Image 1 (cartoon, rainbow, N blue to C red):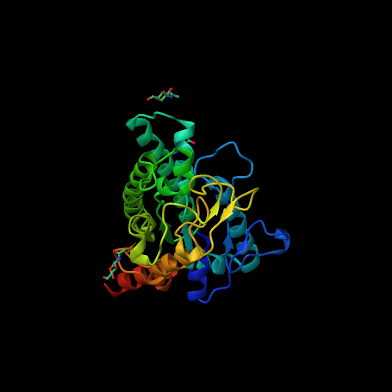
Image 2: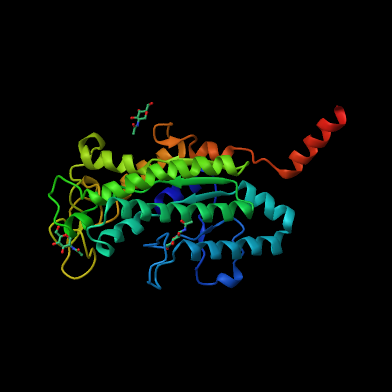
Length: 303
Ligand SMILES: *[C@@H]1O[C@H](CO)[C@@H](O)[C@H](O)[C@H]1NC(C)=O
Ligand SMILES: *[C@@H]1O[C@H](CO)[C@@H](O)[C@H](O)[C@H]1NC(C)=O
Ligand SMILES: *[C@@H]1O[C@H](CO)[C@@H](O)[C@H](O)[C@H]1NC(C)=O
């Protein structure tokens, strides 16, 4: 959801983040942050060299944190890491790949898979915390089963979504809430928000007219029954007005929908982003170690 990053950056008066793998990585110091996002990225490692799964992204982040320490010194690097907001939006592709990897999965296999995805995210967050990260924004997983690409692949009726790919994201999103609440208990300075992307997209799929959208069950660009695949490739079709659509291609929303949704990440109420919105998370004062030590000391000496 690149547009969300962009909207948050513009509101927060930040420059747009440099992609970590941009052309001259050796010369870049990423002092204002970096974008580790990768198209099609998964949490779990799949055998695809083009997908930068979460562990690879974490390794890139460690390189940036080390660059900061070299460039700025430990104290300033720690301060920046404490202040930084880590925006995590991952998991959808893990579920998208699941039904073809494991047709006819049992309920317990689905739960086990969700636990792996969540367990690996939790480990990554814990590592980032140990390196100084304090503020985390989680975007939950989309209703993947409503994407035109999925509906076309599994021959789903026009007005329906693929059930298994609604069930897995819902299991994930509930487990994510529990996992994050446990992190909050375990990690004393952990601060977070969870952005309910699932319901924002699902409501647009089911009630497009509420949002001024005409078509939510077919993409604007692509081939096949729902124009679900190959946008820009071969003899694909293109709609005349993307703003009448929810999905631009088989897997991605149109820009207008992303920008409306990301405004809600920035300043939405608790019914869309809990317990804080991005504006509030950014404004939170991090709890510095120096201050803790100082106030402990002050309390003792005044006893
Ligand atoms: C899944 O179940 C369907 C029928 O329910 C069956 O035709 C198919 O062979 C099964 N696939 C696998 C991989 O077991
Ligand atoms: C991470 O995922 C792997 C599968 O790729 C799984 O075996 C492992 O148990 C997961 N880790 C946690 C902590 O859940
Ligand atoms: C959230 O609440 C606001 C007002 O409190 C309301 O206008 C908005 O429609 C709600 N959004 C959702 C997605 O429920």
